[in-house]
Image (cartoon, rainbow over all chains, first blue to last red; front, side, top):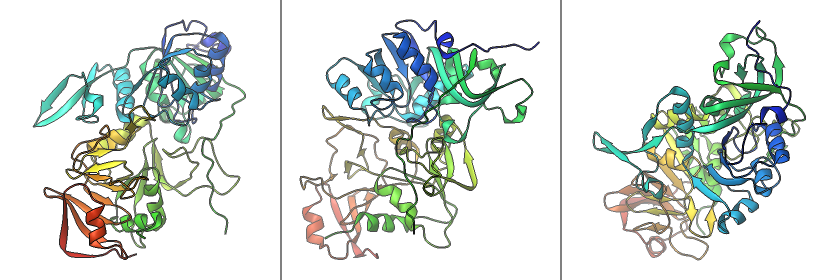
Amino acid sequence: MSINKVVASADVAISDIHDGATVMFGGFGLCGLPENCITALVKKGTTNLTCISNNAGVDDFGIGLMLHNHQVKKMIASYVGENAEFERQLLSGELEVELIPQGTLATRCLIAGYGIPFVPVLAGVGTEVAEGKETVIRNGKEYLIEEAFDADFAIVKAWKGDTMGNLIFKDTARNFNPLMAMAGKITIAEVEELVQPGELDPNMIHTPGIYVHRIFQGSDYEKRIEQRTVRKSN
Amino acid sequence: MGLTKEQIAQRISKELKDGYYVNLGIGIPTLVANFIPEGINVVLQSENGLLGMGPFPEAGKEDADLINAGKQTITTLPGSAIFDSAMSFGMIRAGKVHLTVLGAMEVADNGDIANWKIPNKMVKGMGGAMDLVAAAKNIIVAMQHTNPKGESKLLSKCSLPLTGIKCVTKVVTDLGVFEITPEGFRCIEHAPDVSIEEIKAKTAGRLVIAEDIKAVAV
């Protein structure tokens, strides 16, 4: 018998995400979002969440659904455009927001998964991102000290996964998913196709199952496209 | 009448060299991809995790799992590579990307750039812009010379929150091409039907006109 991390559903997977938890969500824009878990969290009504995600969804999809439901206390992201409700809550003071450079966001996930507590980065030096941050100078260059994220849960979406939690992502739906998968104290993976151990080529695994605690077969993916662009026909 | 957006992009495309890895931002920078000169092979990087960005898909072939950093549906090319966001910014930070082209709200004559926030008005976030400008060696800004109110966007000091400091190498606007030098903006080319007087009048930062200034070839 192999280790089995399969849970029955999104509802079961997120059942212990408590009010006030810090939760990471994989995805870039609407690409590679853990749609099933977001739906389950909206249904569960968990509140006061601190969400870490590159974006905040759009008004009626992705994290936007949780914003609409007033479940988010604080949003940590790099880009939050295209979301009127987000902007309204931010300007009215209902929502706390921390904007951080995208590469710093990715790296703070990465080092959490690599067991590195902090890292010096150039991005943001001389800007308001640097305010209140510790700095270090090496060879005449100033760097900001950025901390590894400390998230209670990470929720990611993969293309394929096996029952041991090994994950493979597809195309640019990879984005932040493997990084956040490494960074959660508890990592939940929803996959389009759940298979048995041995069915995935070990050489092709993007996220080793050691980082994943729960996995389930997702369903009914909408995979909404934010900017549908096509070639001009001749 | 200065350069059109397409002509700005076309002018920037002349900065491309064979073998370059290039990151193009949203807006006018994206258009540069349409003017890659013949015989010049470049690889376009999209910071959401793709090297070798291809054109938009044919209608009906859009794939929600394959987008660029502007969230537009795109395609891959033979030789494309996909990776996660940390590696994407890792290659940027490590200086592997040769050229970055991005838009801006303001550029200062020392190379400071502001393009991510208008206090109390617009809060969309910096996305990958701060990482790009902090790391890239060659940063070209593509933008209109003035804002909708007619005020210069080429300043002695940025008034908006900064994205990065002393990082821009060149600015291409509808009025001309400007290098960032210790003396300020050095105008090396002017739009064909734009006078040097107009450029002087519409540039708030320190400006030097190159002795061998010529018209932009478009």
